[in-house]
Length: 111
Length: 115
Image (cartoon, rainbow over all chains, first blue to last red; front, side, top):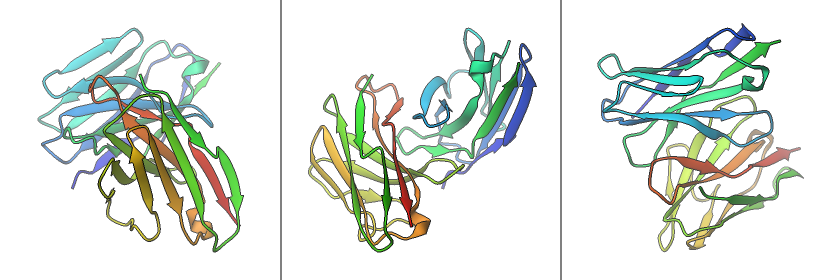
């Protein structure tokens, strides 16, 4: 079955710097790759997603890149702000709504 | 988007007891999902609940331990049976969005502590 690995597990950056979180997946049938942000005590919320027919997608300070050949995708956050501090989860699915989530990255943005 | 209400939001339970978590959605949805998030961990799918049929459980989860009901298209329950401290987790209800974009919407979660 699908396996999703996520790195790093924790990441500290200075406010204004960029943050990059990387995920790899194993199932070549996976075609949808969302990223969720979970603030402390809150529900996970979708921040950006990418489908397998696209290599990159950007939404303001957040971007996601996908390398299907290497089976990895990355989240890029530029100009980080304290409110970006949260746990970020990547996920992969082949369209069945059976999501396999990565292990999470705890991002801390230092003011 | 979908608005999901879960209750209880948190509870402290005694070993050996059972607790039922309720999930109410503001729109009709075909599939509802139950996830477990152990402290500091990722989200693990327990089962998929479809209206009118038995839930589909993932490897490592069984119906006797986590019975699920899905009486209609807006409501589901998850019961955690014969609880032990290892069941202390956040349990999250989730649904796919009405526009079928692939996005999952989550409830706020039910934080269970088993003593």
